[in-house]
Structures are given as C-alpha cells and as structure tokens.
Picture 1 (cartoon, rainbow, N blue to C red):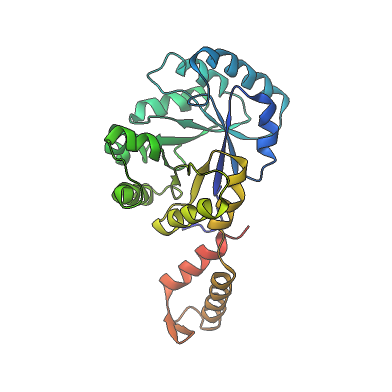
Picture 2 (cartoon, helix red, strand yellow):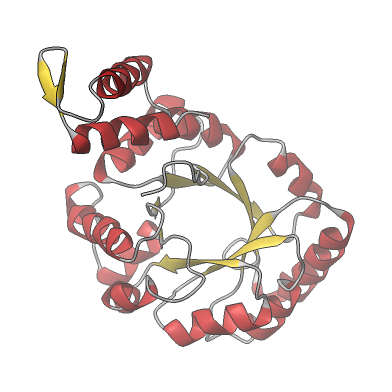
Length: 270
C-alpha cells in the first residue's frame, strides 16, 4: 500500500459554457477542477461549450478534468476528441455502466485517467467490472441522479448500503478511495463540512463541489485533525524504537495494522 500517492480531496465543477470562470475555478483551492460539458450545459449550447473548452485548453498550462456527455448521446464522440489535449488529466464519464465506453475514452485520450460516474442502477450493477478497467483512477458517486434513478427520496441511511459498496469495490479494484456526491447546500460551511466528514468516515477519499464556497470546508473535512496527527506520529515513533515489534502507545498495543493507519493519517496532510 503506497501512502505517498496523494489524490484530490475536492473536485470543483465549473460550467463548460462559462469559460470566463475556468481560471477562477482553478484559483479556488480545489484539488481538481471539472469542466462540465454535461448537466451544466443546455443542449443548444453543447457545441459552443466544447469549442470554448478546446480554445481554452490551447492557452492554458493547467491540468483539468472534463466531464463529457454520456456515451449514448450525440455529443459523446466529439467531446472525446476535445479531451485529446494533454491538459485534460482525466475524463469523467457520466452514467457509466459499460467497460467498453470507458475503453473508448482511453482510445480518444490515452494519457487521461478515467473517473466513472456511477449514478444509475445499471452502473451500480456493473461496479465490479468498472473498477477493473485499465486507466480507471477512482469511482465517483453521482448520488442525486442515483436517488432519482432508484426512486430513493432519502439520504444518509437510505444510501448507506450503496456508498459502502462503492468503497468496497474500489478497494477490491485497488483504486483510490471513491469520490462522494455533491452537497446541495452552498453557503453553510458547517453543513458542507459535516457531510464531507460523513463521507470520510464511510471510506470515501474526496467529494464533489458545485460552488467555490464549498471547497474550503470539504478540504478541511478530509484533513486529519491535530489530535490525529499527534497520535500518528507517536505511533510511528514508538514503532521505530521497537524495531517493528509490537509496542504500546497511550496504554494500547500497536502492531502493523495500527502503524498502517498512522501512515494513512499522515498521508492526508497537505
């Protein structure tokens, strides 16, 4: 297990038809910015948004994620052509439920990582296959669309099983911890951070953001607390002094699983 590999803990959406916001989104502090060609762009503006994106990619040195339109839409193929830019670090595929669609993304942009967005019953059913597709970095949970598709009106416990299965499948596929869905509350930082903390406790490694105001509380939620960092350092110090043998910290025995947990906590520090 490599604790030195760090992945974004926040992904900020910016509408693909608002190019004047692209650089502002990059300055908002998110771990990654997603230029959205799908839900944020009305059908009659899809072609123009793609053209704006292509022009901007030629001017920037930034690395971004692009959410393309779904594979069964008329815009998918052209969106993938726009993603061939070296500045597209990853492609987010909505309504992901077929490994072949992910493979099409890789053929169009071989250097881009893949972020399948699981937001339908079919996508959830295909989860074990999706996590094993070459190039997939992590799974993203489209919780709102998922609720709509399955007719689930509630959050929290209503989606607990599905969230836990995303975490399990990601681990079995040796992927980075999955990305949780958006919080619809924008300006109440306490609510945003509390929901991100819930995601972390379930095993998620990041969260989607729909507004720059959400970035800071999401980032804070995925940071270890000062107490966690202090504990982790004491554990690693004690383990080093014990030469890898079992040791005691705060009156409790520490062994290899505890040491690995300490490494994981410190890896979340920025």
